[in-house]
Length: 459
Ligand code: ARG
Image (cartoon, rainbow, N blue to C red; front, side):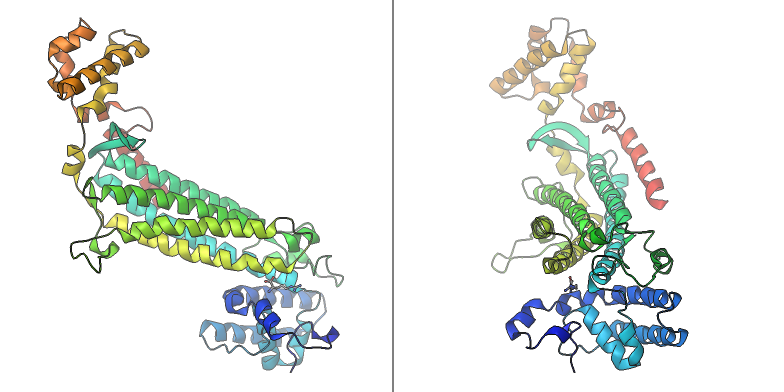
């Protein structure tokens, strides 16, 4: 039996290579659930427009539910000629209910059908990724709450810069993942526009009321205002892939920090065995593979975005078969990110933090800015204070001593009115406590931020 939805005009069969090249069922089978939801709404609309009878609608709806269950239970058996999920569902439906199935495609094209199903899938996938981001945020927050006052070096240029707290470091990532969540929400808003009813490209002439379709499909809140754009638009894929790629980039930065921090040279943290692997040759090795994979897989997330944009670039209106290539990058990014977020959350939640190693990595030079601030409080212009403290740092390097071990005479050489009280600057906890401006690393501020995040996340 001929299952091709378009075979009538053709005298010769499709070449075997072409069939394999053209078929998308192997991957777009993931749209089964979404495709059937779209078809149920469409069947309803056909009934309301008087294009099918109530009885025919009933059989279609029952048949579609049966097909849905076959997919859900893994019982669906694809047939030769099921070139894509839309063909497969319609073919199976006609086996189950006969005649009425031949009417389901009335006024509809696979162009508005696939755009609808893909949007439905994307909306749901975005929710799952969002949930994954939340999980990671919770893990980071729990660590932050434990370590609001745990001192560690903060870095710029990967050089020791100023003391910070580990809690503050955790919350920095929480902020990034919050923006990622917002970006996904924002992109999802525009995904909720319904293409169904646009037909192949020009609209439908059968009196289908498109507004009513959004009532049957909860995920949508508006109908696309232009039928050409409705079937040609893949902005929602690009926007979500960008949001996913940026999350991947954030994950890669988190991963890189933790790879460095878990090295013997830093020793600030230790990844749990559950998120590490060993070496087949070197018995002593414990490698941060979870973090390396997060760092590495971020490349795939960026690549998928670039693949989609490159595919879309220069496409004439409206639908072109190129666009069938929109799905695999999306599926891959969703799968990669969802699992990656779970791994990241688990690794952060089980991270062993080593405050003593963090403290041991603090050195007096990281308080040079505090020294300069001290001079500023005595009325020295900052630029001048910067130069004076710079000379002190150089002196300490020449004498091979820590700044706190420089004799008072050296301090008085750069600023005659200094006395022994200046040495009170050499207190890392004090330095951190003083960074109490909004968003600063002072434990009091970090605690406040933790409380704010708790409230936000529990809401
Ligand atoms: N499998 C196709 C896709 O994903 C469905 C649309 C086919 N439409 C067409 N006019 N050939 O894009």
